[in-house]
Length: 309
Ligand code: AMP
Image 1 (cartoon, helix red, strand yellow):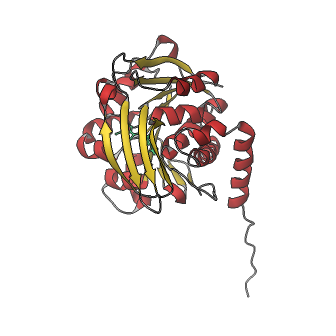
Image 2 (cartoon, helix red, strand yellow):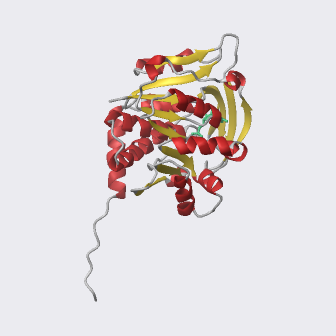
Image 3 (cartoon, protein in one colour):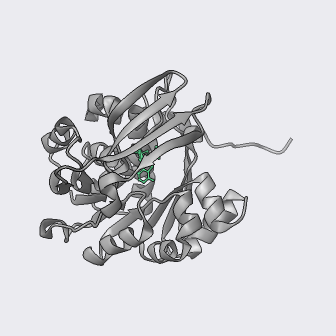
């Protein structure tokens, strides 16, 4: 097993879905990804919080073996705050407020103990900041990155430099289309591959995720749930589950990338069963293994052997 560096936002979120709401609860990409990854490997977390950030979220991570040396707490500062509202189908959301607060001056410095890590997830942050982290990592580190529409629009060159240096780009379907400038998802993923990463994972929300790489094509459905409460953090939990499995196996062969997608899928399914960290807190390793087995059964089918009529 290897350690995993996880860099990104640590937030207070206010979320409204058709089924309820939560006010100023713990969220942020690095939090979701780290809690998810901690089921499988030891996260080395990099982020910044204000004085208002609840200690119990950090205690949860510490209790699961996470290294928090890279988390800065700014005294007198306010944590990154995001609020969003979801449509009825939970597929689209509108961001209502994004207050960067202490995140505005986020200048990640990796503690010495993180720098030899062999796995890293760069969550959605300004591409220049992602590049600054890449400078501090060992060149052999396997790096996955995320981004968002805003950076694709406003920082395309810097994002291009990031993509040229990472191993795997994890993007949603709209981001892949926007980045590639073409509506056909298959073609768009190929264009993103040409930008540098060895693999592209296209997240499609409730429709699952697809991996396109130079030597594989794989698609997986989402884990079927009777009750989805809040999709916030699904993508980051998926990422944490993926990088956690890769670090645990310490091998990024094509089959492990597929297994990592399945791990990400089942861990993300728990994240969306409750607001904030509720679902991930309750998730235990045996339930991950059980859901993983169910997912395998869902996609299994027999070969077709037909004789000519
Ligand atoms: P996801 O649902 O996987 O896209 O992740 C949602 C999380 O991302 C929330 O907990 C937010 O706090 C965080 N978030 C929202 N907007 C941003 C942003 N502009 N930069 C970084 N993190 C963000």
